[in-house]
Length: 258
Image (cartoon, rainbow, N blue to C red):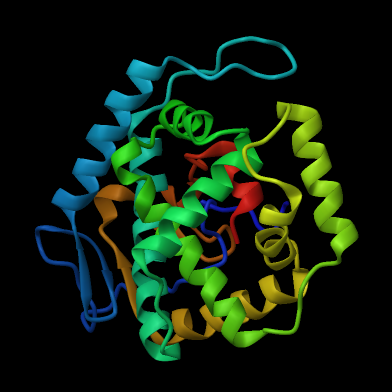
């Protein structure tokens, strides 16, 4: 279910503008400024510390083709990926207020479980993959809440656009072939799949998020990198030029997230 390269992928649906003028500056304790709201360095540091500990405990992921262990995650890469997620989460919250959309704790829990089962075969496998990618279980809710909000945006913006039953069945059958019997029947998974697989819904959400990103001034603290509008991520900077794309901390999770 490749709807976008996120986190961003992981969360690449958000186009941000980095302003370096005196009109928008970060204070000493901020990792980024999103309009009038601040992402504190301490918040970013906590996610990165927990992510580094999680990946060390889980061990490296293996390349499915070669069977070789992946290279260890660098802290600087994880910082950029996590900050990308935090900025996208901030913008999603602002857009939710703009649209009058909200998700409940039950909505988030349901999304978490359904995503884990359909993309990884189980919630436990989802959490392990996240840990191997540098994202601790305690912080997965940041990603899942943002994605659940975007699904709610799509319900508001394109309520009549859904994927076909055939597309949903094909995705479900592929998951069963890959993981074996799932704890969700096709009937239980179908409402989620027809919403997530719709390209029209994805396009509507991306257009809406682009609008709010153009309204909000975004400034990344230079110690963490710069924002690349073309890559839609915080990237490493060589002098004043962005050179390296941020990683997608959750790897294949991007394929299931909008």
